[in-house]
Length: 447
Image (cartoon, rainbow, N blue to C red; front, side, top):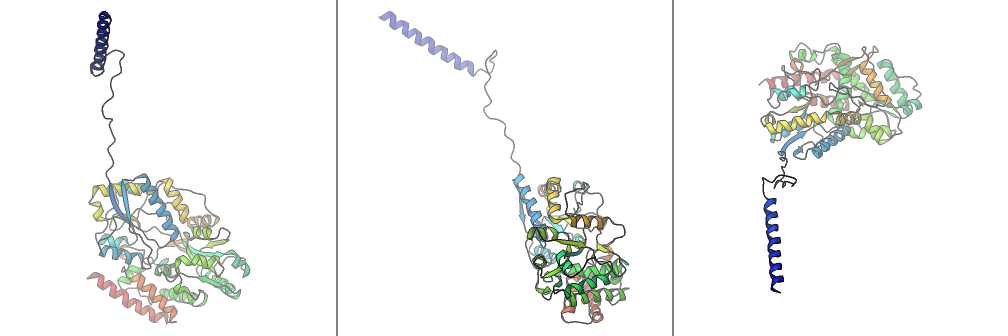
């Protein structure tokens, strides 16, 4: 009995000794042979990306453009959760320039801003030269004061007549007009058929620029692209024959063929007026195509550039210094600058840029020529822009350098021309008012 107890005790001691030995061997860093080395206590972890916040703003006047930009913003922030973008953009009845000035006055000038009045804000020191790696996305970019400030959101597309094919057919219009006089004949036929010829979104002051600049380009700017600088130097006048003819044509069109409710119609209401059959035509840009197709996929429409009296087609079509711009304040912060560059490069990547262009029916501004399946109407636009006989110009407020007009003059001028129609004013007398106001604004800006 004692022998068995002693044996049992020795066995337990031996087992215990082996267990201790095994434990010690497992912790021995010098252990070799077939044993598996122990794993490190903590795996190496990737450093979290630094959180960055920047503000952004763009012009929200067009719903299609707003939709396209918002979609890209969401894709970017989903892919980059460490970057927060505070979007200042909002729908407003104020002009984009006035809205930006208000933001600046309350210390909310955006870090990244869609810039349209580049020289004004560059001269004020609010924006900086575009970083080189963003310039590299483009071939040729317009310069202001010898510097490039903008990454253009898209290439330039023209404005023209978007018309209901049914309305034209019902009015017996079988051919598109080849001269401006023939265009007026089309308006008479539409009017006689019982439909309002043209809808205008005059509640939004910027919308007025479409028709006004059509006549300014036809009569003034295609012949004298330096007219603005001559007006500033007082060697040209709004009472000049060509300018008076442009405004006379505008007044005649609005007085005779435009929907009577044009002053209370917003730009975003014009599509519904067109597709409902209340009006036959809308003079606007290619960004409206998508809105029409979304509102009524079965609506049949066409597009053409309204010819001048000689049969020439003159359109808005020259590149302007506009697009994404980096604020001076943001440029002083390396983290913000890096995040903004990352976003802008993301914006122009084909995966995002192609659907953006398709949504607004526009053309690529980058070196990489983004091509997408386009509608027959958009194909016609491409042919128009590629036609060497088509003359291209800028709007009165899109010029820069010596041809820059006083920044507040555009809206004042458009409102003056609204009043001209409403009050059936005398064109020459109203153009005298334009001369006086222009000179006053030039003088005020010089002080």
